[in-house]
Amino acid sequence: MPRRRTLAAVPDQLGRVALYVRVSALMGRGGDDFHSPDVQAAAMRRVTAGMHEVGVIEDIDRTGRHFSREGIEQIRRMALARQIDALAVYDVSRLGRNVKESLTFLDWLANQGVTILSASEQVDTSTPAGRLMLTNMLAIAEYRSDEIGKGWSNTIARRAEKGQHHGRPLGYLRETKRLVPDPVIGPAVTEVFRRYAMGEPIGDVTAYLAAIRGRPMHTANVKKLLRNPAYRGMVIAGDEVLPGEHQPLVDEVTWRKVQNRLAAEAGTPPRHLAPTWSLVGLVECPQGHKLQRQGDRLVCGQGRGDVKGGGCPGVGRPVLAKVEAEVLHRIAVYASRLRSDHGAQATRLARLTAGRADRATLERELGKARSGMVKLAKSHALGDLPDGVYREAMGELREAERTAAAELARLGAVDAPPDPVEAANAADAMLAMWPKMTYAERGKALRLFVARVTVRPAGRWREPESDRVDLAFHW
Image (cartoon, rainbow, N blue to C red; front, side):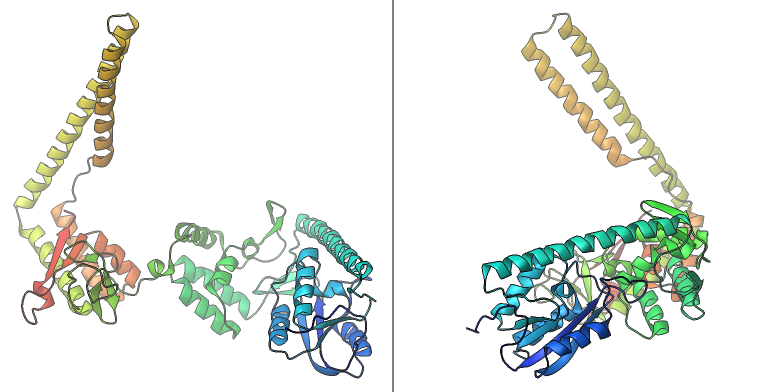
């Protein structure tokens, strides 16, 4: 068990010390509570004279309100690896301006045998008075942080009312306190909006912007960039979005397309947003389990010996490219048959007539049930029916009403099946555009014609995929 050390103003013995520097913002800050990194480091070196300095850990432009900081994580790693005996700070507020988290972190360091050295305060937590003083100092630091935040909130609001944006979004430079487009990154941000509005996968958009910047980026940060109204020339004042004085990097039409796509794709898994094969979610085994891609082949997700080892017989391992080629061939044959089959028009009219007849029947049943409920309630009110008979009859009528209404909702509106010649022309157009379409576009196009693709297991040795594929068309 490591020896527990206390928060001390000076080291009690020579050892290895790391200097921790934190500044909330280097630019635009001043006053008595602003201490530059150089000032902090010089003060700490005076306190740690004679000790072995192992390094300077910096958190620049990072708030002390929370402990999710790279510098704090580095201190944790060094303490766990027994690489430091002491940690020097300019004052305890540099560690954090949150009382609870600061005390928890200081206690954890003490348990790791790390002494805290403060260049500005004389604190000894081995005594009740020292612990009280430390808590009060941290509370004052948190209070001052709240006051600073409140002051900046008011400043940001005043700037926004004048059309001035606070901060510097990616793609802009700040010249004479005004935002101007960056000559390199600005056009790249405009291109990011255009690509995303045109449907390019977010991963590809992120890779493009990362290559222009020359540093890695995460898709979540790019989506945050796409939601920032600053790029359409606006500023935020509280809950209001006001016109800004800086030049926009995106036009209104592109901005609306981007926001609509972000809203439509919110919460959708990335694998569904950027499919890597055209039949994803459309092809299944005879038992109704969706097939999955495994390399260049397809497997049943519930098949024995395939992916999860379920109870389904599976489909073996058919080649994906051959299944896709057979699906396209069947669509071409189907389109040709639609043009030459004179009975297709009669079948279309028969389906439309049958659908309308079914809907009319259900509507009559629904009307009878509701009319009967009104008559029954009137008879009961006049005392012509006993309570028991009324409740039983009313229950039957309500059940009939619910059944008819549910069937009507399931049936939906009676839409005429597409004209056979128009459907054939659409299928031919899809097949002609197939090589130039993305996987997502191919999947959407297939669903206009195909309701389901079923692949059955091989019935004989090396039975070709073309003999194992069945298609169910929408019409």
